Image (cartoon, rainbow, N blue to C red):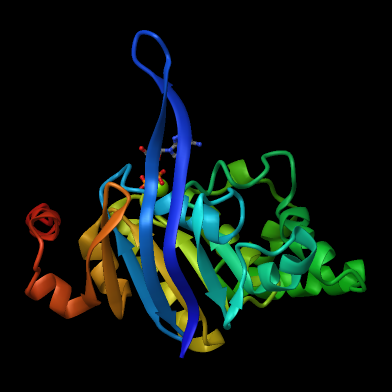
Length: 258
Ligand code: ADP
Ligand code: MG
């Protein structure tokens, strides 16, 4: 069953270009359709600038799409009010590329993890929030005494684990992982990817896994869609796309894998 179905999504940004500031549009996402099957991982791959983050931001309603529809559990979400979207937003969490930029440097890890709990479980006591946070930190492989520390005291890989713990705090069903390991050293990437795989099995999560690196996407995904200049140029089971690519752009991405 498709947990998320996206139909003909379009996001066009108005810009001014050229010497005279002529009005123009950037077609960041131009007619993108795909389905993410419950419990599976759909990989979304494409070079920088191909529109991947714009897709993820539109799905979480952080930006207003120009056109198209998205159905989460058969309910159209792009047209929902913020109020009506809130209970679904709890089920759809996001992990960002930059675990440094996405964690407030002035907040302790305890407050960072407590924030989504306060929003989505307002009746929880402080003690309950701390217990949940401690258990989450333990699950993602960080010492529980990290709660009183600040983001800058952690390495990039550890910060991404904190970002993952924050996303999991509200017991989501669907995670959008937007380049979750791109900012990390290669040696650290595998451990974070394996953590994401283990968590998917444990909590029956569904992933939209975004990256520019086809090797990383193949490692994580059941199915893959390839985006170029705002459009899907190829899609199919991960092995098929990687072993029998139909489109030149996919072949180019494959050729860039060392
Ligand atoms: P990716 O995540 O694949 O690197 P993005 O979705 O970030 O790509 O960007 C796709 C295209 O849309 C790029 O050309 C980018 O410059 C443009 N873009 C993204 N956000 C905006 C914006 N707010 N205003 C204008 N152009 C934007
Ligand atoms: Mg991006």
